[in-house]
Length: 131
Image (cartoon, rainbow, N blue to C red; front, side, top):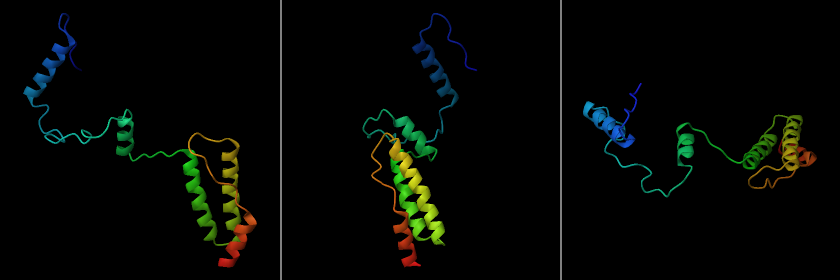
């Protein structure tokens, strides 16, 4: 635990003394990145820099729900065309249509979905043509 600031000493003086003593002890020697410029020194100011940095370090990404659903819709259409059976293709399209209808019923913040439910019979006919 660090020591408490003694009464009568300003915080700046107290902190400066602690930093100086730590430097004298070698606490700052061989720190990662020592002698290298800050990566963000030339970057424009971004008030969310720390959130973006944490997300990058932890491998987290975020996209608005509508963009995520658009990607899922595209993946579902591909999966339906490559399905092992017509019944499986119908199930895939039925499931994604339910998700599209739910998203259209209560729109999320962000860009519009720009998708509408697919015609299951049309997808099934396309599947039969390919197989």
